[in-house]
Length: 112
Image 1: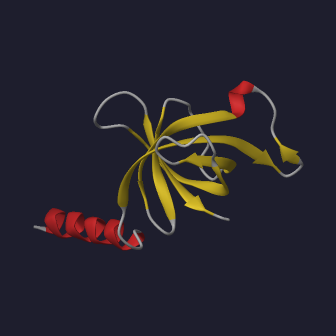
Image 2 (image 1 turned 90 degrees about the horizontal axis):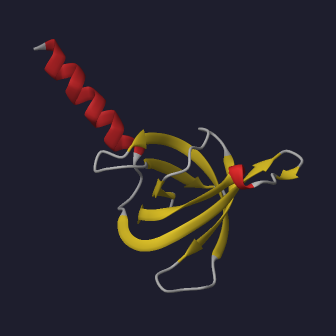
C-alpha cells in the first residue's frame, strides 16, 4: 500500500512541475553552449534536434547530441518550413533516454 502512495505522490509532483498546456510542433532547433566568457567554439558544443512540444515556459527536444544539465544555450528555433530561426537563450532542465527509440529527450527552459 505504501508503495502506491509514494508512486502517486511522485506522479503528482511531476505534474505540478509542468506549467501550462504543451503544444506539439514540427519544428527544429539549433543551439550552442554559452560560457561566462561568451560563445563556446567547436562542433562538439553544437546542438541540433527536433522540437517535440512547446509551451510558454520551455520546450521538449529530441536530439542525438549529449548535453550537460543546467547548461545555458544560445538557440534558434526554426518553425516548420522556415529558413529563418527565432533566437532565444535556454537552460537545460532535464534529460532522459528517448523511450520510443534512439536519442535523448531534453527539457529546455526559456531564459529570454
